[in-house]
Length: 92
Length: 173
Image (tube, chains in turn red, purple):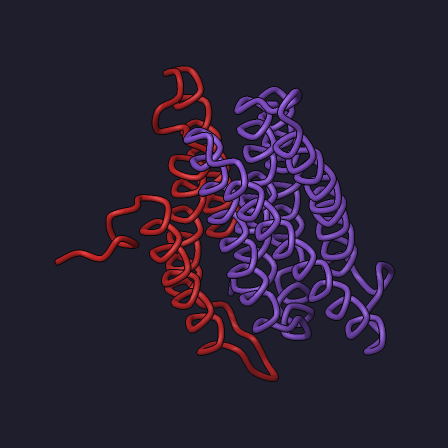
């Protein structure tokens, strides 16, 4: 039987986003130290998690999931443009 | 409210891209500076803001159900998380400054203090807006769900921007 928290989308999203934040924290901690070095796998993981969190906040906390089409498209476009630029500049 | 939120997304998005351009030019300086940031405090502040967003989102739903007393408690809970965020960020800034890292140290710390500072201003403004939401919820003549929704949208923006700041400044390698 599912708990009331699992039934509530806001609570479910909150738990999921908190969990992936912990993963992101662990990824950073694993490469933390007196001398940081470039790590493409860590960065790709961190950026993927950040994108997941941003989309969760926009779609479920800001309720863009049920907003007019133009707003859904604008926020999607913002995420694609920002993450695309970040990734391109990181890998350049 | 969405006009301001979308405007902020464009402005902060531009800041983030400029940060990445600078990072690509001074990769070693950015990595060396980054290790002085407190990853744990950054992560805890992310969890604090996510929790605040959860409270505020639940507050909107309570207001829609006309359960205004519960909505007030939830929005206040969100606001308290915001105050906790400010306290942790103030401690973090004080620790960095005590360690000799200031706005003038290098490009990374200029971005760090400027962007987290502008974000902090948004947190303070968000707290004022949540205060207005609570005052309106307590007043039957002013009470409107649209006010609660608008205030919540702004507060979630604060959370959203921090998620990107946390990734770029604290965890990117």
